[in-house]
Length: 237
Image 1 (cartoon, helix red, strand yellow):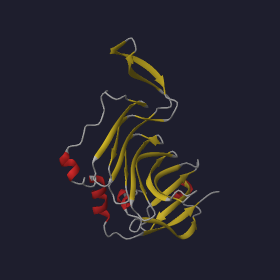
Image 2 (cartoon, helix red, strand yellow):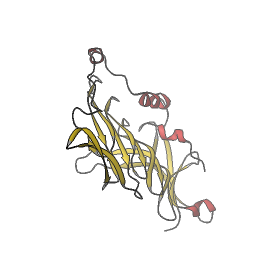
Image 3 (cartoon, helix red, strand yellow):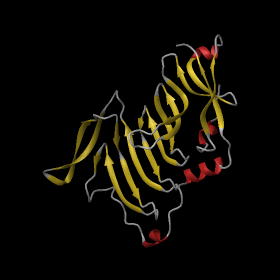
Image 4 (cartoon, helix red, strand yellow):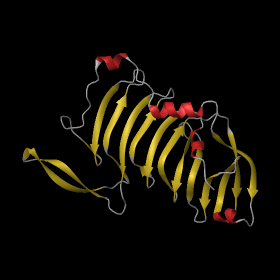
C-alpha cells in the first residue's frame, strides 16, 4: 500500500501521533502475512512496518523517551532493511523541529542541519558514510620535506561515517556565521589551508538571518493540520 509522503510533515500537535486506537490481529490476509507488525493510519496507510526477517522497512515515526536527564524527542523518516535511509527529521516533545539529517546505509551522509527551538539554524555538519565493502580512501597530505608539495596517502576508515566537508556554526541570536571548519575524510584542515570561513560583513551582522527555506516550507505546508491517529496491527510471533 502506497504511503502518502506528505504525512511525514505534521508538527507534534498537528502531525501523526502514536495514539493506539486498538491492537488488531489479522489472520489469513496476504498483507498481514507480509509484516510481523505495523501501525495503520486512519486512512488505511501503514507505517512502522517490520518484515518477516524482523527488519524495519518503509516510513517510520518513532518516539524516544527522556533518559538520564537527556530530553526525549520524536523522529520520522524511512528505513531500508533495518537501516535509516534518506532524509530524517527530529522534533522535541513540543513539536519544534530540531534537526534535518540525511542517511545512507544507516549512517549520516551529506549535509545535516540543526536548529534552535525558535527555528533558527544553529549548525550545519557535513558527513560521508563509508562503504563497508571498500573502507579505503585517498587523501592529499603536505610533503614534510617540501611544504609546497602534497603527497597522496591511502587511509582506512575505522568508523562507518566520517566528517567530510564544511562544518558551519551560527550565532542563533543574529544568524551570523561565526566560524567554519573543513574536514577531508575525517581529518580537519589546518588554519591557512582552503576551506576556512570567510569573515561576515557588518551588513550581515546587522540583520538577523531568515529561517532556512526547508523550515519555512515545512511550517507553511503543515499549518493548521490536525492530528492523525494510528492503530497497530501485528501478525506472527
